[in-house]
Every structure is written in C-alpha cells, then in structure tokens.
Amino acid sequence: MKAWVNLLLMVSALLLSACEAVVTGQPMGAEIVKLDTATWQGTWLGDEVVMVTTVLDSDQGLMQAAWVERGADGARFETVTGTVRKSGDWLFLSMEHQQFEDDQDATADAADAAETVEAGEQAVTEPALPEYFWARVENSGQRTLLWWPNVEQIRFAIREKRLPGTIREDDNLVLGPLDDAQMDLINSPNGNLLNWAEPVVFIRIGD
Image 1 (cartoon, rainbow, N blue to C red):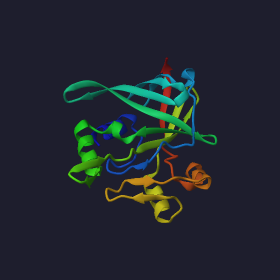
Image 2: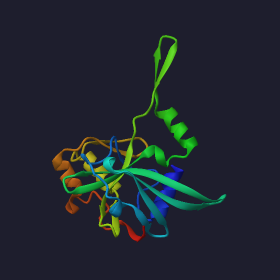
Image 3: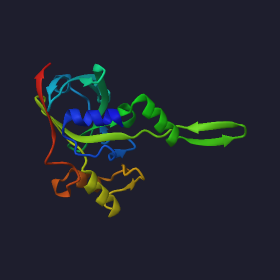
Image 4: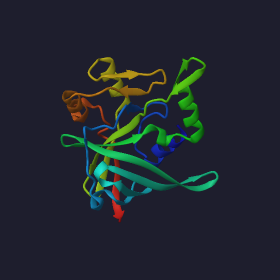
C-alpha cells in the first residue's frame, strides 16, 4: 500500500495505520452529487501539500485530484480519482482502493484475492471485487473538510453488531450495506465513528 501511505502523509491528517483501513464494496452515499465546477474545481492548500482538483464528469460526481510528490528518484506527478455521493444532507468522497496500489502490489493483491475455478481443462479467474476508501466531506467552495473513519471505533461497532461488516485477517474493515439508522450513527458526533477532532482541511488558493 505504498502509494496509499504516501497519500496519507501528504494530506497529513489520517491517523489510520498503514495496515488498517475501513473500506466499502461501493461508493458511500445513495445519490450521485452533481458537481459545480465553481465549487469543486480549483487549487487547494493543505498541510504541506498543494492539490489541483478537476471535475471530470459533473453529472456522475467524478473528480480528480493531482499533486507533485518528491521521491528518491526525483519529483513525480500523482493523481487520484474520486466520486462524490450523498445520503440525506451528508456528502461522501469515495476513492477506489486499486488506485492507491503500486503496479506490482496491485498485481500481487489481485492474484491473491482472485478465486480460480476449474472448468474442465480451462481455469477461470474471477477478479476481486472493488473496494473504496471513503470520507465524509464538506465543501463551501473556499474550504474543504474531510473526516476519515475512526478505525478502532468502527471495529468496536462491527463487533457489537451496531454496524454490518467484517474484520479481515489483515485487520482491514469491510463495511456492509448500511440502513438509514446506521448512516445516522456514522454521521453523528456522538457515535464517534469518524475522526471528528482531526479533519483534513484544504483552503482554496486559486482556480
């Protein structure tokens, strides 16, 4: 998960372990948000990073973030694509897991996750289902806030059957489909299921 770890360092706010995350089988939120380019597209300053966002498909809630990352071999251009959806008044940004994997890691993960079914002499490989990292998001057009899942609290909620999901052997958490009451629980500060006290903050500094 090297690229995912790099992204965490750059946005400087996720307290998730590099080996632990909360993912879903589909983007969070029931309804696609139509993105206004005046609000969602621009240049943003975060903690030690400047990101440029571009609305790729307004009607599908699809956007891209881009930044420059410095490495041992010099600077390189990085991008990630996400989708914005909502449930009620709450907005969520979801990013497909595979986007954060190095090519070699992604190949190895796909090989490990794929299920091979023998059909006569021919082997049929079923690819792993997509998974999504997600955060609750608020965007005023001038400031964007992201609240990532609280891994430990969601782990407790799954164990106590307050949320549907599984705890995998690698300690990653996979949330199942959520009903309205469970969405309310996630979005309530009283539930403590998001990192409310430590949001990622981006300030608009240009178009």
